[in-house]
Length: 413
Image (tube, rainbow, N blue to C red; front, side, top):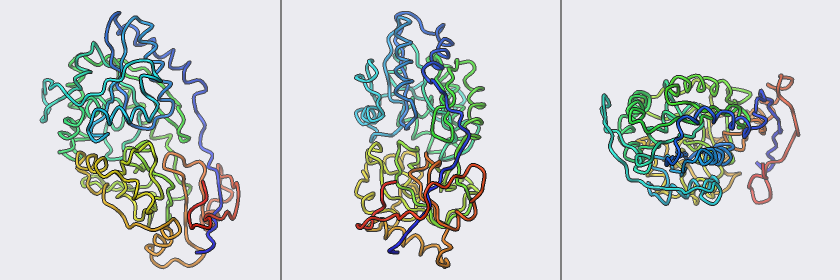
């Protein structure tokens, strides 16, 4: 494979990005004003995913709380991330631009939890000690389809109130039940968390196919459960996708926890690899190659087991304590298994192609993407180009682009 050429294309999705996120958020926050009491200590629960405009949103919420004569502080709403250590979780937030320096309010990271009344829940119900000791909590999170399961509530404020506020103890208790715990127990536990009276409301963000903010809603406590369902449908209908459903080799330049909770979005690649959860019907990908791990993943490579081939440079960045802690807590061990390791990018592609069985030369269906968040610009092989040429929303940018440099590594995306 001395010559490996692909065509660069652009997919045009519906562009419904918010023109002014700050202005929209300012209007939405007025809904929560009646719940911010003067002198109150308000915990802002912030998660561990790479969310567009997260720093802006958290800062604006903090300023809003201060303007109403209350005292905001930030807590990491995470389960076992950061090696299940307080300093590790604060470091993850700092990597996303959330710190006392950037936001202007304290970050209080603690793994200690308080046990709440369990009600009808078959497992104990926990809440972060700092959240419990506050006068109220505002949840801040993105609503989107989850990478581990599909249910009534997936990734969003309801899940954050359980797995995020409950820290490692709650995450372990829920994940012990596998997919049932995620899809059935989370809403049940969330109702107990909300019945504590600590949740003042939430800021829900929805992103479009360009990974841009398209909606920002302030949800009051009594409407949060119902409105999150609507927002999840909107998020699902605005996800990006590949231009074809049958792919021989998918090349992903980078994976990481800042890209997806599973490192790579399972909704995009059509692989879940969790017992009890049905695999998606599409896309159908024969081999997946992962080239690198993002710096903001802090060595956590959970999700690597979704691929077939990785590179040596990715392998050497793995922090196994973080990766295994995440995998063991979730009980999804398949996600942490190490695929075959190639010496360089070129070798990785050659191995992946061989694993597909006999492919007639020149008819290999190959796609290269930056990551699973960005599917607007990608590189495709000629057979795929022939299939999509002339399709609405597909623009050819540059044909016959050589992928490799002299060191057998990919040229920058």
